[in-house]
Length: 69
Image (cartoon, rainbow, N blue to C red; front, side, top):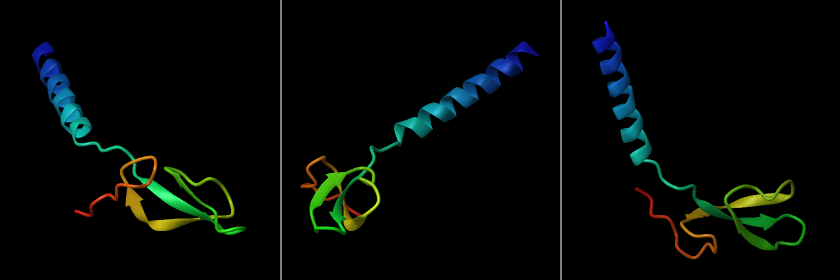
């Protein structure tokens, strides 16, 4: 009985490690203000009145585009 619980725990732990090892950081996007066309770089929307531009980036300065796989 104890061994089967241990095996389940081990399998679950291994599955979790594999899942976490394939995770990537969130992309950065350029956002344009609908009010004055100002452009900023952020991972999340700055709020209402901003529209997300299409290209995703790897860095916080939105200089290195993310390659599409």
